[in-house]
Length: 310
Image 1: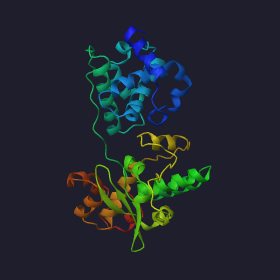
Image 2: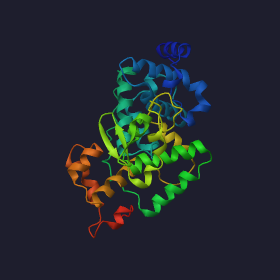
Image 3: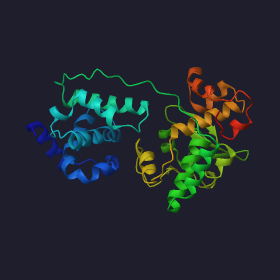
Image 4: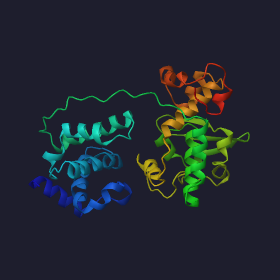
């Protein structure tokens, strides 16, 4: 390890970030004694430029683990933080990530490289593929999701699984929006449950009745800023839903993006106007609804109301 990396790692080890801001993926935990000081030092250095700590950990930690474990690369800034390695990692080691998530991780890694190894001249020449349309869930898949939620091992996991489905399939929220919902954001109007979203796309969303029962206890509770999903959290980090799902050990494809696609398709199949759907979904352009329109059956809407795809 070179002098700058050693100094940086020692400083980070002596002054670790708070537990609420540290991201430790399950796969890296057995090696954290070896990797922790190097990764924490890298994140601390890059975060001085204003980058979000949890987001940096979620991008840098699996990348460093892959470089060190699969490629046998020394823990040195000039060896690890190279653009060609970052692109190889994205293309070879992240098969479960969507194209959008891959682009987000790649961007975070390239920004880190610009700070940690500005002399890097490596270029991979590869480009990320365009995102394929997200396929909504059909009837049988939705039934599997319901069964999965009630089959969780503990009461708290069953509650969180039901909330995840209610906010995803019932309200069409994106992953980060699900994580940001608090008890005060759940309300009742004319016997209908609504969820208020306050982040980058502020809006109020009605919840489909069959999913509203999962959220009713929060509507009846005293208003508070406690998280609705995974209430023991101290902050919001992009990996928290995926880590919850990883502990479920299920072969079912459970993704918030597919829940949102199912929710969008159902509203369109039920006859909601695109303009009204844009208002409650946070989508800003008609083009953003095009993929959902492609999945709406042309022979009537009754089957689509139940989550059926052609």
